[in-house]
Image (cartoon, rainbow, N blue to C red; front, side, top):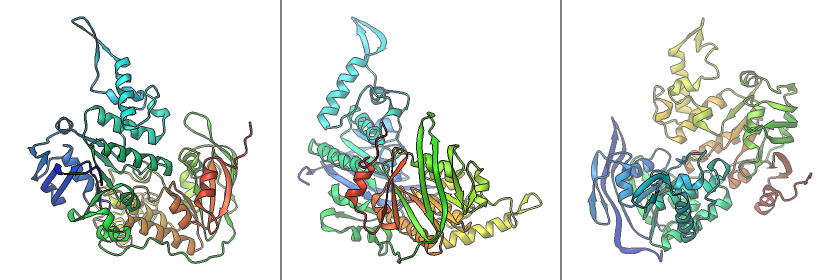
Length: 518
């Protein structure tokens, strides 16, 4: 708050309306942000937050309304103009070239070439670029290794590169879209410090988020958008997380997971000493064993990159298991086809809903029957029965509150939360014995998170087994009956969720207690 200069309005967006055909994504929205301010944009998935910022950054043009930067009316028709006006945007999905180094990514499009007297050699002055990047990173406390390749650095480091890329282009206003969606708790802490350091040096930050705790930790002011309309702008220190949630969703939201005591039943999924390789042909899962029982949620906690993705792909038939075996209700399903595994009673909510969960160009109804399209009543004598498919999809859309309520809408036109609802509706309706939920609430707002949690607990209460993989430690602790900690491709400890605490889990997640087999 100390860093804000209230006499300097850096951004004024007045009466911004953005329509896509008949759909109004932004409806007459006003936004004012002052110099040195951290301003949060809060709203459910699909509320119109990113659309509003894409208008500010020139990726979209407003249907109507005006934008002022530092008091000057501007017409931002593309991102180059936004960059000229000192606006930088770090997108939720990073825009980096994986095979390039850190410094090459930062200077891309802004390269300085080596001069020899009057002649331009055409060679990039990488030495000078490195020096500039190092000075910049030192100034703002954004440590990076300029020579490292992007594919070799952590997600947190990639984000720093994106921020430095914007600062290198002279950005005074930074838009961060869901900046903490894929970060570990430690990286989130670091990012909060970075944001505070940037504003103390006169930068202005807008964060698009639906994580209430982080808004309370870092933002000065917060503008809430619901279904395309601005609800209010509030001073963050004057409101509680519950107040923010209610304004965002339009109703009271329960943060507590409603879960009754329950005795777990027999083991239904046995993972016995399996090894799975990653894309580089290195062991990502190293002799891992685990039992999941009927009527329990077993949470897997761990820092990203410790074999979680490869484990899930191995047991669901998407990646080869090199050794060991997987039993489902006593039947060996090791390296069976995904279809056979589904038929045997295991379904999954994949961690990447867009790449693995949905066919984005298919409509909602088609996505609802992806696993059952060849069965009656959806298929008759080898032909799809569109009437039955549409009827089934409409039932699930109502039951799972998918918005818009249109089974013919393309999956890619839905918000992240509604895409997730389509996947959950499809998988839960298969009535599996084991449900694998990998990052089921990544990027979802509190209303959608509450919805997902309710369905996972419902599966457990119906005596089904749920294997939950999440990087959100709160989620693991609130939902799980038992917690298995994964480190370096092995389970290093299994704890009772009732007695587990963050400190112990954090210690195990960092490799404390793991046996060194060197």
